[in-house]
Amino acid sequence: MSIISVLNPKGGSGKTTISTNLARSLHEQGHSVLIVDSDPQGSARDWHAASEENPIELVALDRPNNIKTLTSMATNYDYVVIDGAAKLEDMIAACIKVSDFVLIPVQPSPYDIWAASDLVEFIKARQEVTDGSPRAGFVISRVVEGTRLGNDVRAALDDYALPVCDTTIVQRQVYPQTASEGLSVFDADNTKARAETTALSDEILVMLA
Ligand code: ADP
Ligand code: MG
Image (cartoon, rainbow, N blue to C red; front, side):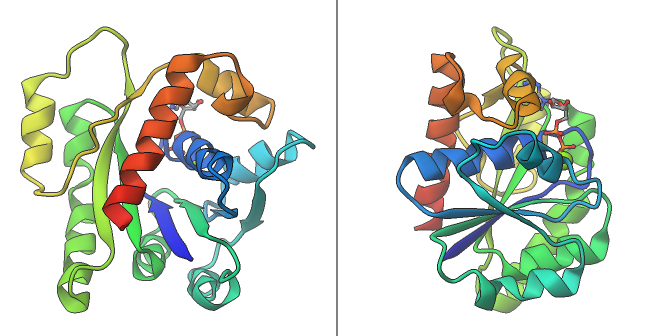
């Protein structure tokens, strides 16, 4: 069992969108997956409740102590995907501790990237005492199609010295559309969205290996 946390204290960076679609992508590849909603706002819970056909199991754990139990409670899943909370330091720290991989979605703006600095420091401090666990990487999220990412964005990410996924997640209507039905891009007719989501999950599995 591997635990992947999708973390960024900044709201709107795409954590819930990426968590739900990533979980579904792993499920499509034949893995058993549990989504953990660690955000008291409960967006992933609302998403899960919106469909009776959702094949992914979800549990809500919004106390740091409950997150700790995942390492012993979720051993029969191949992957646990934690949808991160905003601004709750204890919660984020608990997620970092149990994770094998932390995915940090950031919108392509220097302000959003700078806002990730405390999180990156947290992760690096943990890596130092554990010999490199959890591994971590950025994914640039909500990119406007057809735009080239500015050098400022790449340069700001370079400063953190963490890997950046080659895959970017583009701003597409299909993400909120499928979310409102409790579904994922794998339930919609949008080849590009499915392809980028699959590419992202493949990249994460390589980084986890
Ligand atoms: P977070 O969980 O980090 O707060 P969300 O996943 O809830 O972020 O995304 C914030 C808002 O942006 C939501 O309304 C969501 O539907 C929308 N959104 C996120 N990612 C995309 C995307 N790739 N394309 C279009 N809309 C998106
Ligand atoms: Mg969210």
